[in-house]
Length: 238
Ligand code: C5P
Image (cartoon, rainbow, N blue to C red):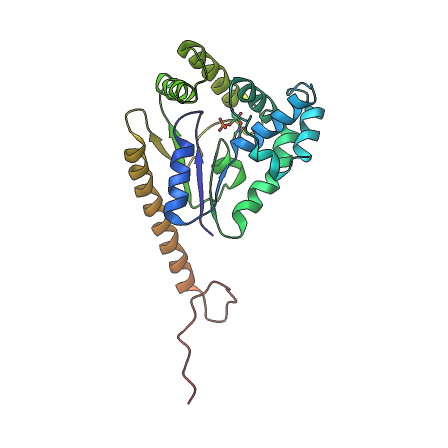
């Protein structure tokens, strides 16, 4: 099943890209950041501290699909709570099976921080999407403006700098590109140009995976029980 892992820091354009790639390939899409946001939100609801491992892990274990539909998962408070719960190993462990299960049946496009390094280390396609801090802060600020949320660009940039540092420095699944990830810097790219560049990589990688699988299958003796082996054309009944 094709798994496309798209990782990178906040507001690098991962979500838009991942959604478009999923639509183009007819694959399900999961924004894994929403899981951490929903856990953070659950903790805030109870008046707890998102950095408290016991409270956060309990919230992660109680997560339901309805939590992901909440309308209050974005904004500075949710950003900070998500980054805090995401640094707790027990929270990450509680969310692992759901993410793996999501891609298992039909393949999927997932975006996050650790998809290519931890969740699907064998993903056929890994993209690490980045952009300069200034550009990412500008994009987030424009999004807030469009939603009518009053925000100050310098504050948005500072919050983002802190969250990036937290995501990169944590011990549990820190933000970093997988060794075999293709880097895509979207600082100077609009959404269409980023999509085009990403699709070129996706197609190259998917073709390479296909070629590799066919080469392996062609080398197998005919008695090897391989479910995915291409079947010989059926003889028509005499
Ligand atoms: O991607 P988004 O900004 O919505 O993610 C919110 C927070 O969730 C991030 O700052 C990060 O700490 C955490 N996260 C993570 N691993 C993922 C996705 C998100 O740690 N796969």
